[in-house]
Picture 1: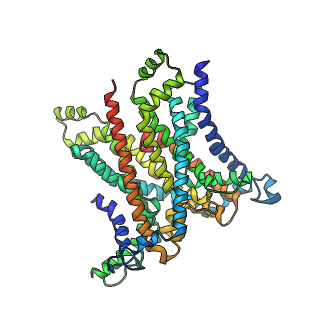
Picture 2: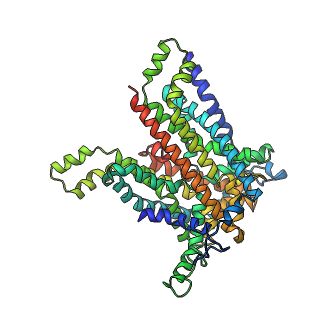
Picture 3: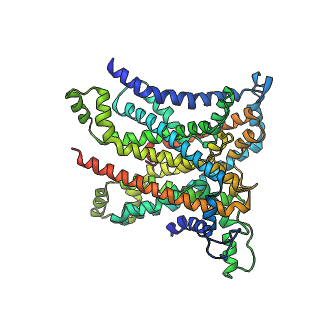
Length: 252
Length: 283
């Protein structure tokens, strides 16, 4: 029942993406692939897609790097600023998107820096850093510090140990964190809406198209494509986490 | 000391990044909230007028409480639907549980905007539901519009958040030591008794995490009301968005945002004591 509730609305959209009609109503008018063809003829759409991919890639790389460093610091060390740092780093988990978007908008306005995809990317790193931190932390707590100590006893420096022991063991978590950040960024609208300048990301472009009923079939078709892509990505990420779990079992 | 240096090197970059792009923006927002205007000479003036304006604006406050109510209802419906689902997955589904969980999660990973759009397509007066019912002859004429109401916003949001609520509840149920239930049974407890006295109390942290993970984003929601809410379905977030995109009254918008932030932090501290961060984040 609940599975039906979850999947029906999506299936309705997919169904209409093959329907040969401008309006999204029953009865269906017959099968067509023309919307899928038109997708690739829309330069604005392809441009927005490219923007989203870049923003997602760049912001996820930054979020993964920063979140991992933070995760390492809070799991492997005890220090005075730990509490305050954790508090600040986890507020983004609960901050409403509109507040975050607006706050960043104010900074850019205050500094006189024009809004751009960079602003969107920065916003997305703030959203994603806590998630990365938590994913990586879970992994770091999952294997023994003794492995790192052994490496250092054998003469490796701290940073060598980090690069050659800790990070490789955490690799599945890092990749999972990266993919999770990427999908979040790729789909993010509420913050991006305030921060895009003239260059739209895909969700912002989609939103702008919703005003034109004649563009609706195209939007719906794009949905179907994105959906397929995200499902594949999630599946891939899930496989990685599974691999991570196996790797953990193999450790003493 | 070596230790210190390592911490500084690890913590420096994320700390700096979060300070510059998160704390400073919130600080600037606080500064803006005391300004008399968004542009020109007005912005140099210090004033409490924006706060006064908010305190006197009963419409804005009304909207804030209504949004809180909508967020509460959305979260409550999500829990009512998700709890049995998570319970089934954890206790009855056996070895298939992870597959079923994945099936549950996949829709959650498809575009947020488009899942909301799906409801717009379905609920509209010329939409899929109405035309389907007309076509199949189940109804004679178009049913009154289901779209553009508070209810439409809640339905769409429950749909969007359901998997995110099921996840922490499931995680909470998985953590329950099954030997407790066996012991209860051995001691003559009936199934419903052991549910009420063991399973339910022990699952509360997961439920709270699920509740918060819906309640908070819904409270700050402005996109869903724009798409399916119409005039009757607008929320407090739309007010904030309006100040920044149309009215261009940034100082007032800052006050509105800070009020919401304050409320959210309050709720999180109030509810969140028993919540695991990792549950809240769904990782």
